[in-house]
Amino acid sequence: MSVLDTELWLRADTEGTETSDQSETGINFNIRKHGPVDCVIGITSVDDTTDDETYVLNIQVSDLVGGTYTTIATVAIDNGTADGTVLRVPLNGNKAGFLDADCDWIRIGVDVGGTTPIIDYWAYLAPAHSDMGKGVAAGA
Image: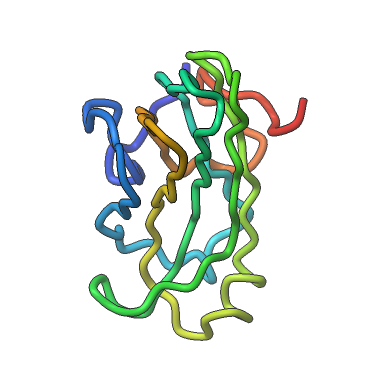
């Protein structure tokens, strides 16, 4: 049995839908000092009614919770992505430290586009390659 540490949620599964660009509040997690971690992302629902909607999830780090964030990974969610899809995005602390040498905070955000973009998703950090009861490798 795996246990999920609620302090590692980047976006809770109860947050609701997003219809415009939005970033979550960062959590204090110094990725530079941890081994490999994955960002596990679940797509609860995504609107592709007019087939021109776009969704890009951005995982970002910063030295301050309210500071300037640097993107360390992006995931484009394709139109037609099935509700319930779960992705695993590997994160590298060395890369994060190279891009932001004193990053102590991490967050996730979404950039949306198109006529009627609506997305509901959740995300958390987990040890790399741990299934934590959910998730598959991105692109699998």
